[in-house]
Length: 257
Image 1 (cartoon, rainbow, N blue to C red):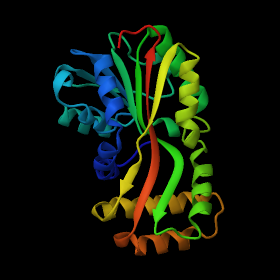
Image 2: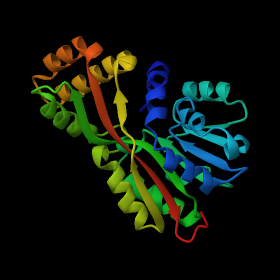
Image 3: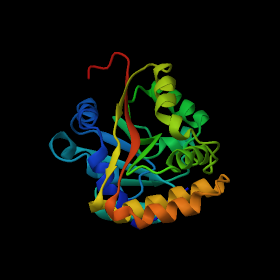
Image 4: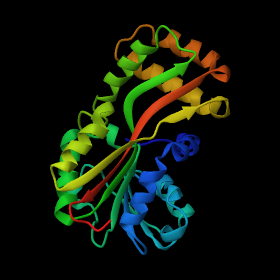
């Protein structure tokens, strides 16, 4: 499970704009100054770039990803970071020593419920807060709307629950499931909306997103997916899209923040 640097760079501005600002500020307060932050599925380090200024300037980032090439890019952009190449399925091997906050972005919807349960147990035992942003929530809306939009969304959501290499993914249920699991492992959990809002200024991201949605829908057996994607891409300069996400912050019971 890996993504191209070009795709990650293309989506980063939309991710940054979508992040829930109040929850981001709360996560910064929870971690405090001189924090060591472990970032899961780091890619090129976009989560670190979302946390900038103030207390974050003294943070140490520990990037964890299974793709060494992406981590090389992350380290080149964040020379003071620590980089760990490992399979995210290996929860027990996560380097949590000295960590003040664990983060992830656009990850939970790709992971299995069993993985989330194991992570929650590990973080609960260690008393470490968890911030997970941009978890796809199953809602997609286009303007102008089309007759096939709902069927494509349903097909895509089914595809999101398929195995991404670790086990059947939580998909659109990831935010709610993670909230439930973390709450039962000693955390106070806040879940906030963080939708992508795509317009004409993100036309290339919109095109690639539509193509990916169409491919996924077709893989589930939706025979209208190719036609839907072709029509949507042809109209992308005049269309808008809202792609729903949630941000989550889990703080251990009794934490001062």
